[in-house]
Length: 596
Image 1 (tube, rainbow, N blue to C red):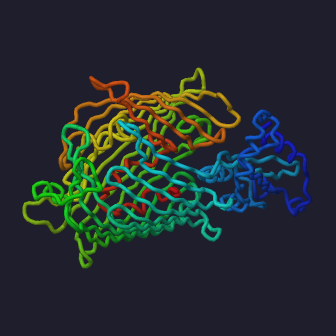
Image 2: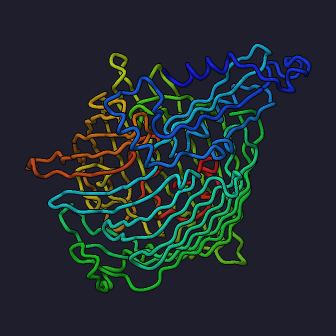
Image 3: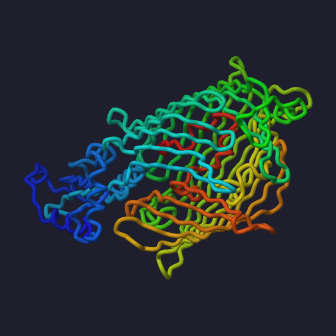
């Protein structure tokens, strides 16, 4: 029997000799009565007292619980928007449930009230932990087995909600390794802290972020500060024809970014005007010579000749700006809970309505560059029957106020947008069709910029270094099916059939070319542990749909979490790596917790 059934029924029969009983009727000050008691039931991964659990797997339940440290009650209590003695407000219960569900170490959350004879309510907060020790191994098979990285992380250190991790990433020119730390409750407050440090192929990186996010839809204030320092090689693919093992041109870059923002909401719950101010410091320079990695061998780098280096140097405009910015936004949203979208059976919070913002910034000439920056973002969502339509778009542009004669003042116009449709067939309840359309492009770029068509978030079945260009269109269709077998009480299992199509155009990117339309198809297996968990492990097999393709010409990719879907990190990593500035970094997404 679910906890809500037997625990709620039991608490409904209890009476408490509390001060509330001696007060005036609750309706005099609280129309729905007051909260007389809050009961926290923080379960481990499996509730071994549940009689509905399969007796055959009792050993698995006990083993998983023994290897896991249960989330502390104070971690859960810190996120609640109510206390005993407050007015009973179903909206605050729903918002508390959503805030708790945002934690990656909680698989299931249920917050509900039980009416009492005296007119008050008992509130039950029922949580079940997710498996919090993660080993994320990225593998690729395309002519040979290659490991693209490994990440070992504990998302709920000793049950405190803190996350620590070690990672190693090696994908083409990228070879990063380091440590990460994240806590959403610094000193048992609502402050979030994220920190990471390590080495890259070109040098070092360091990132630190402290943020006070909006508290659900009821929060009025948000503020944050970010500092990062990064040394990397920007990798240009020289591959007009999509051949194997193309040469790569490497442009060394060094970037420093600091931003601080304060944002205020005005209005009702979920319906608010948003105003913010920010200050950012951005420095970007290009130390060292342009290098060439022949045949894609990044350990055998050689200096590039002047003709080869010229296209890369054309995008090596340094930045040195201290910028003050203002945000104006509108938020009219509501949240619904659905299952079987990007997860298998876990509850997922979906934002509907409109959330949009516009940022204008002006650099201070006395400290470096003299320019005006513009940035805008929008999110939209609508439920159509049992289906969902979701989309987001983002754009940035920079106007230099002091330009050389003959050079256009508008520089670095970037835009990207993605639309999703989720179409659950009504017959089975175990099947979801996901459709994606994604477009990205840039114009008049003076900082490093290049897209490619393949990769795990592009047209799967093609390598990441195939078909470079400056503007891209991607289309995806996936049929995700929940099996309900072989052990649905222990873990969820499902299969997926997918197809991708896309095209890339040369645009402004160095060595860009028109790829023509390319397509791929494949199938995969999805598993989530424990049952009801929201982070699936996925293994995909993808084949390019081209004449002459053989059965052995496939790629295999293993990943943790969905890489394509509304819950995936927004924006392709290729597009994020060359963001021209920090003009909106501290504003957009300020109500979301940092990724851990």
